[in-house]
Image (cartoon, rainbow, N blue to C red; front, side):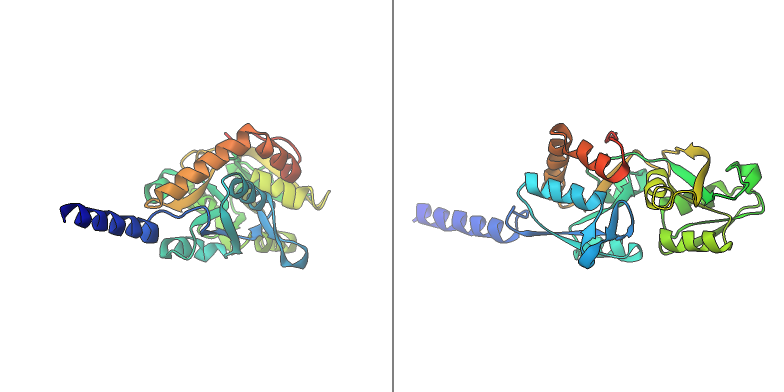
Length: 259
């Protein structure tokens, strides 16, 4: 009788594990990307998502045999969607910072990019703090770059925030901004390479681990340990087999290290 009861208990435990345990490879993993951030993510022909983060996630999901669904989520709502469980993973060119690591597991790093100023080709700005005094600099709201600008409080610099890099660069074109502070790889590919002769990078690239972080990583809820471990393994695999190098060359024009 005891033996029979024990078998029933084991069966119940097993059923509970199946129903409520970690996500299996057959379950849908919903990944959120901000498609206003080329070359990491943008909307291509036919409304299809494209970009470095898109290809990176697809490669990880393939090597780990995960069924992944990629969704375009605006930046200002992407973490709320992760926190609420509507997303399992955020892949949005995120910088790995201490602040984010306190709240999320962050598989990575998978890329490193300092901050840089972009100006119109005719601008006389040199990108120094002194040269920027009295000028207006644009960046994306709630980004690590906005936090950097607010923390550094460069004397005489006015900061304007936008919901996308494209919106900021449009105001740069119109003269409402004197410069835009963004990530070097994004600015280089999305604007300088895309419109030769229209823009230039000025000043020295800014690498501040407090804000630019320790490279880029994904964000996963800390209690989703199995999924976090799976993405860590998948990332390591695509770095080791050369896929990562191929993707950086495709999207940034040169092979770039993960760290």
